[in-house]
Image (tube, rainbow, N blue to C red):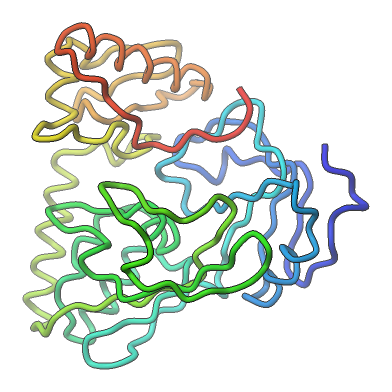
Length: 298
């Protein structure tokens, strides 16, 4: 446990032993040793600069692609609130988006300004900070296709503006260091008609509703698609559709989704994922990689 004497003063909200289960989609898992909701960028910078360097720091967005282990998360979990959720146009084709802004807000603001190419963000249940960190994508597009640059507060409290070329993007990966927090990003699209943009958002929304278990306690895509393949097909071929472990289940609707049927612990959810990986490896020889981030102590 990090001693209270080591925790610097803040202008935002700092909560010890904060339950994280209510903040993540799976609705499972332990507590954060500290949960920090900064008032603004300067508050975040001051806090990180004064926080002893050995204390781990992790950003939490909407918690949609995350398993928080049952033993909780050591150190500080940073959650960007309303102050970081603004989206505004910089020019005809570029939006400046706060790290806490949702994909729905970004895509609808783009529509209102006649900016096309950002519609896919409508379908990713997360915040700008998370998209940028993991090169989030869906429906054939990803963040690297639209990102101009981003503002990142690094663990030392310093802020840096990083262009796309410095993020080292590959599939669902960036080179951002641990403990660094994306506080804003600029996304650029191309000219479009608001009605056509809305139609594309509606199409994406309907496709997602039809194929994914959105009404369930889930964590989004569980495994990365292997080169030239689809994770869900491999899971299906390995006979894992509907497979359960305790309160955790492989979705019947989309086999690359795990579900908390109501009482699952994070341990059960993660163990089910590992069992699926084992069966897929045995059946097809493919070693599936986790796309869901797993954090904290078992």
